[in-house]
Image 1 (cartoon, rainbow, N blue to C red):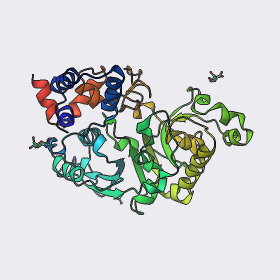
Image 2 (image 1 turned 30 degrees about the vertical axis):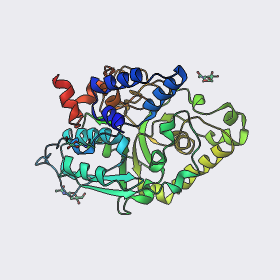
Image 3 (image 1 turned 30 degrees about the horizontal axis):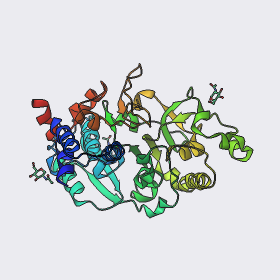
Image 4 (image 1 turned 180 degrees about the vertical axis):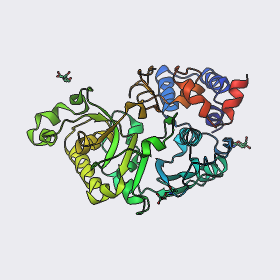
Length: 354
Ligand SMILES: *[C@@H]1O[C@H](CO)[C@@H](O)[C@H](O)[C@H]1NC(C)=O
Ligand SMILES: *[C@@H]1O[C@H](CO)[C@@H](O)[C@H](O)[C@H]1NC(C)=O
Ligand SMILES: *[C@@H]1O[C@H](CO)[C@@H](O)[C@H](O)[C@H]1NC(C)=O
C-alpha cells in the first residue's frame, strides 16, 4: 500500500526511484519482474483528490444572455479526474459566457471524494451528477483491443439521453481527455438541420478498417451502409439533439449492434463502432478544428503524435497515452505541453519547481 501511494502521489522522480529500489531489494525472476511491471502499467493512477488547486471564478461578459444555457455532459471517474478538471478549466477559460455552462456529469458509482474535489476546485460551477447504472450495459460489452475501452462508463454516452433531465434538448458530449482552446459556444450553435448528431467527419479515412472481414463478408450486415456514404467520426466530441435521439430510439439502435458484436466479432474497438454503424454518413459534419484527436497515439503503444495542420479549437488525447501520465513519467510528448497549463493537480507545480 505504501508502495502504491508513493508511486501514485509523487509524479516525480521519487516514484520511479522507489520503484527501482523496490525491484533491486526484491530479487525476482525475470518473469515475475515482467508481471510486476505490467501490474504497474495497468494500475490506474488515482490522484490524491484533496490536492487540486481552486480555479479562478470566471464571469460572463456583459454581452451574455444568462438565460441561455450550454449543456455539457462528461463522465466522472477517479482515474480520469485530472483530465476532467483540466477540460472543465479549459472550457471556462475560453468561453465568453462561462456562467451559462451547465455540466451534467455521469458516474457509475457515488464517489464522495470526486464530488467534493469538483466542488472545491470549481466553487462556482453549475453542475449535476447522475448515476449511470453500469448493469445496463455490463452484459453487452465485448472485449476490445484496449482494456480501458471496456469500462462500462465508456458506454455511458449511449444512454445519456435517458439520464440527463428531460428538459435538456441539446447537449455537447465530451471525453475527459480533451482541452478546449476556443469558445465552446461556437460549437454549441451548430445548425444540426435534420440530424441527431454533429461532429467532425473524416471521409478520407479508410472506413473498411473499422470493421472485421467477418462483417464485410456478411451481406446482411454490410448492407447497413447501403445508401449512405459512411465517414468516420470520433465519439469523444459530439453535439447531440437529445430530444431527437430519444424520439428516434437511438439507444436501442446502438444496443442492437452491440448484441450482434456479442454473436460475431464485427469490430475491434469499444463503444465507437456501434455509433458508426448507426450514424456514419448521417450526421452533420462540423469543422475538423473541433476534434484534433489521436494525440494519445495508437491503442497499443500510445506513441507520440504531432498535430495535424490547420486551425485548432479542441485538442483530444484519444489513444492509449494520456498527457498527465506521460508528464508524470517525465517522458512527455511535445503535444502534452499544450495540456500542462490546464493541469490543476497541485503536485504538478512542485515537480516544475525543481
Ligand atoms: C492528500 O494530500 C493532502 C494535502 O497535501 C494530505 O493532507 C493528505 O494526507 C493526502 N492524502 C493521502 C491519502 O495521501
Ligand atoms: C435571451 O435568451 C432567451 C432564451 O433563449 C430568449 O428568449 C431571449 O429573447 C434572449 N434575450 C435577449 C435580450 O437576447
Ligand atoms: C481500405 O482498406 C482495405 C483493407 O485494408 C483495402 O483492401 C482497401 O483497398 C482500402 N481502400 C482504399 C480506398 O484505400
